[in-house]
Length: 180
Length: 38
Image 1 (cartoon, chains in turn yellow, cyan):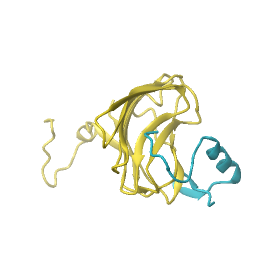
Image 2 (cartoon, each protein chain N blue to C red; image 1 turned 90 degrees about the vertical axis):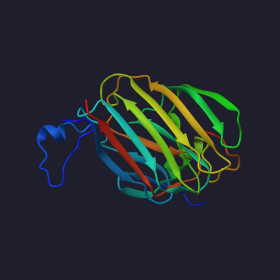
Image 3 (cartoon, helix red, strand yellow; image 1 turned 120 degrees about the vertical axis):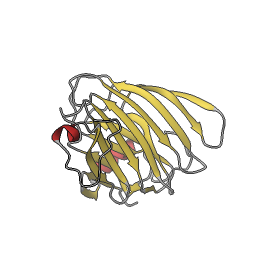
Image 4 (cartoon, chains in turn blue, red; image 1 turned 60 degrees about the vertical axis):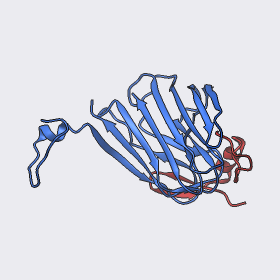
């Protein structure tokens, strides 16, 4: 099959063509009203090793960050990277050393929510690698870029996002699996 | 002060007093008086 595929109108797709789809939407979770935490279950499985999680739409009650925990694990999170105020040229190096979560995987404001998270092997019984970036959507906020891992060998099927302050309303959390 | 909601998949409910106490213990506040990247 050509890459990218060049399907024609009305064409019947074969199993081989469908199985070649590289990125599959595993789950869409709509965020409720004025929530300070959102747990997403049944997101990871043996079907995929690597995942993309997109947080978008919706708003927050104030400028805030969303942290991520996998399962019920509240220790062993490591990351390094930087954040930068949207009104400053100064880059701030940051890291989490054996923390309780991946910090600021998304940012929210009264304008928007925005975050992207890449996870390697959350379902496998090995260390989960993570890269994530958050974009502030108010002039008083930040951007954040981090890379790290969760230092355990636990198999996870879901995750929880928790606000640093305030609440979020609306928008979606979309979980995509990359074809192995 | 109104307790925030918590959500698991499509179920949204108000936090219990115990859950709210745990949230406050993390340093969570209702409003962000001093915007910070965390």
